[in-house]
Length: 341
Image 1 (cartoon, one colour):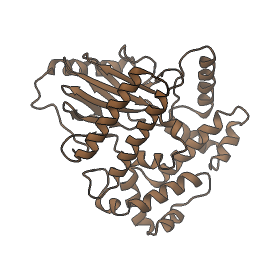
Image 2 (cartoon, rainbow, N blue to C red):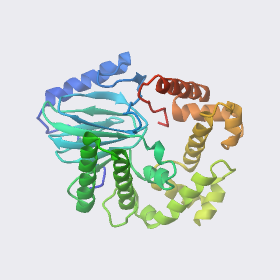
Image 3 (tube, one colour):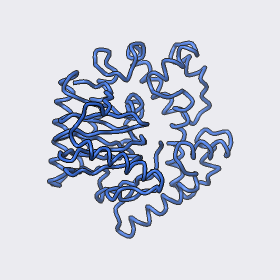
Image 4 (spheres, rainbow, N blue to C red):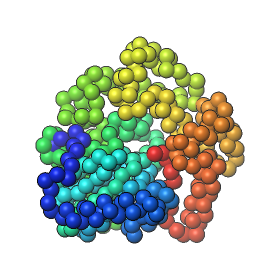
């Protein structure tokens, strides 16, 4: 199984090509009128609000029709298991081709489009990871993943087998909805995430997300990322963190981006914005107070970075959270809020 992201373009694929072409046409038309296809329940621009069962932050759907989804993004992690026939994922005009049996993980906040063949089936898992906020290595593990990661039977057979078993177990528990099924679902999800993280930092694994130097220093960078996560509201400089890691500023900058797929300052700002989210849902804090308590030196810098990462202002975020609370009081399913692009 290959944990390496594999890109396969449409050349040479004949099955259901007409369906895929019509989907491309639909995608372009949708870009113009900013409307989604019927199966996307709640769409604001290209942001999809995902609804879940009451008291559960996970949704599992079996799909067997030629249903295509144009460009959209959402905060839950998405896992796709192609059961019969192929499936396509498009991110930034790059096409990822899943063969029958392949598994794909789409990182939270990734803008993507999905295309199906005329016949076939796949299972789609959507999981809101915010309830795992107490898991210290979660954010670091997500940073290790490419926007789309594929798991196939050709590189790491153990990971493919274990991932398949966990996904099948989750699907069975979700369908049965027996006592304590939510705990079993969360437990299986955490185990899957742990396996992904372990393989991602293994120098011997066919990962493709880390360069050889980053894999060599994986444990050191795990410590650095956890340190940033815990101290993000403090005055952290590139020089300070590079010193903690034991590298020169230049060497650290290159290795950190290879390890996390982003720059040090963008990673730091994302952690600060995540911290700010938790404060914004408290009506007692003003936006200015939240900015100062989240490590930002000015209100304008906070608002600018929040909008850049979240697609909305802090004030708009507070309003969306208030509306979500009102919906839950009225008995509607809880919806997830934006948590980053």
